[in-house]
Image 1 (cartoon, rainbow, N blue to C red):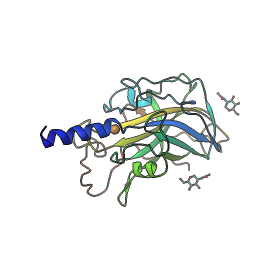
Image 2 (tube, helix red, strand yellow):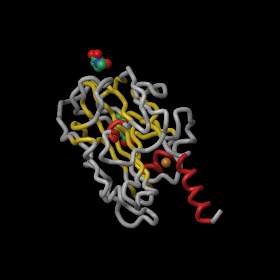
Image 3 (cartoon, protein in one colour):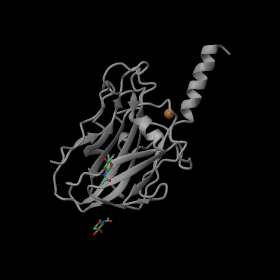
Image 4 (cartoon, rainbow, N blue to C red):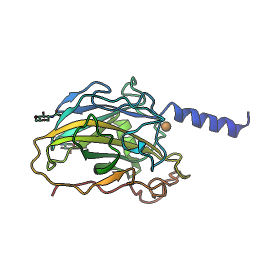
Length: 237
Ligand SMILES: *[C@@H]1O[C@H](CO)[C@@H](O)[C@H](O)[C@H]1NC(C)=O
Ligand SMILES: *[C@@H]1O[C@H](CO)[C@@H](O)[C@H](O)[C@H]1NC(C)=O
Ligand SMILES: [Cu+2]
């Protein structure tokens, strides 16, 4: 075997065993079971076509399991999206450390969180971490045992929402559709909000373009500022 063939085979293998899933949610001090109120796939692979309806809450080639559960969340509180390599991995097996990129979270108000597909209009971003001082958002999550801390805005209308947590890996992003997007949607019921502000909302798919500077980028070496894809997060006023 030629050295170059061997190296690319190793690179492929390390990626195939190193994807990730948002497996469980912590809210109100309680960590719910894996798959509880989250539409988890059994396979941990990424989405790569940013125009696909599967960009909203994942989907084929990673078929997701519906959940009949909804988790109560207090507006203004922190929840934690827990990421793992597979549905059965431990805290030291979050994602290959070579998977570097931004971490984000979005919400969408829905009539019935157990039924709404999530596809289309209504999404707003509530957190993002890109690249600061040599540290990627994904590094922070991996070094924090897979925990992505998300503050639920305290000014939202009460009601049911989908909470979409996302990590993007950019190791292959130098070519179009080379970025690997990982996302799952949790089903939550927000109560105790201080107000009823209505964020500007966006469509998923629609928030990203394959040519976005944060999705079509060579990060080896990383040069200059990183532009996180999608809109800026909603902030209560
Ligand atoms: C939520 O988490 C942030 C850090 O991500 C922290 O600064 C803040 O104090 C936390 N808020 C609550 C209500 O725990
Ligand atoms: C959401 O929470 C409110 C307030 O506790 C409750 O009345 C309502 O039944 C909950 N809805 C769901 C779908 O859990
Ligand atoms: Cu991967």
